[in-house]
Image 1: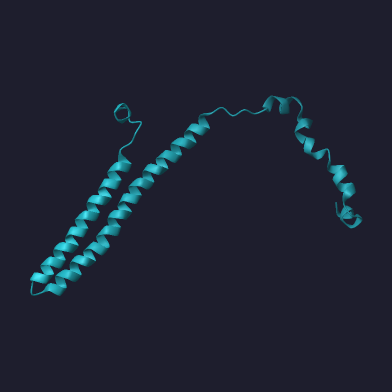
Image 2: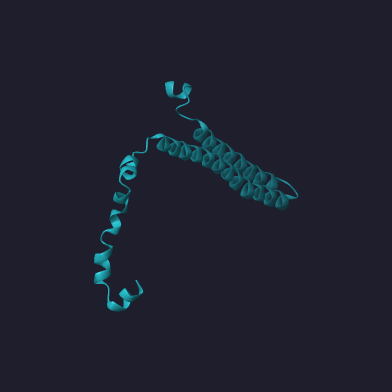
Amino acid sequence: MKAFFSFKKLVLPVIAKGFFWVGFVFFLMIAISGLIGGLLSELGGVFIIQSFLLAAIGIPVVRVISELLLMAHKNHEHLDAIRKSLEKPIEADFETEMDNPIKGLSHLENLDAVESEQPAAVRSYV
């Protein structure tokens, strides 16, 4: 309960899932009522087709809306993780490179050894 009131645990994922299931049951009940109404009515075929089309369109729309809410929540979590990782101090050896700039070029020391291992045709272009 303490995490709920301190906003450490967010309720949006629970609400989005609940929204989906309520919408799913709602459109399922529309399909069932259209089927029953269609069987009892003179224009039965129209009611049946209309109710099943509404359910076939409504359930995916509710799902997409729920997923968009969850995606926004996940994006917030990822951005928060990035922010926390950027707040950590970056440990760099800037002073050493500034005191001795040649030390930063240590990877070039073996360049002569690499050139001598190359075939003569390649050395002429280097």
